[in-house]
Image (cartoon, rainbow, N blue to C red; front, side, top):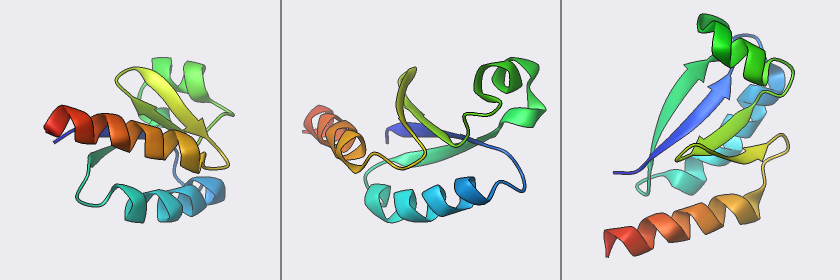
Length: 83
């Protein structure tokens, strides 16, 4: 199954909100891998004040607020690969 990376940090309210919006969209279509940016210096440097960030295959798909169109486009790409 395809993997979507979700960059966030503990205690981030916007991260929690966006995750609640994202999970129903990707359920049974993609797996999600959580990445706490404060556990890796390169992630902290790259995403510090930008979290939450959603990435697929190395490409940033959405930052807050959730870009529903971009997520749907990724899910469509994933579905086509799975056919």
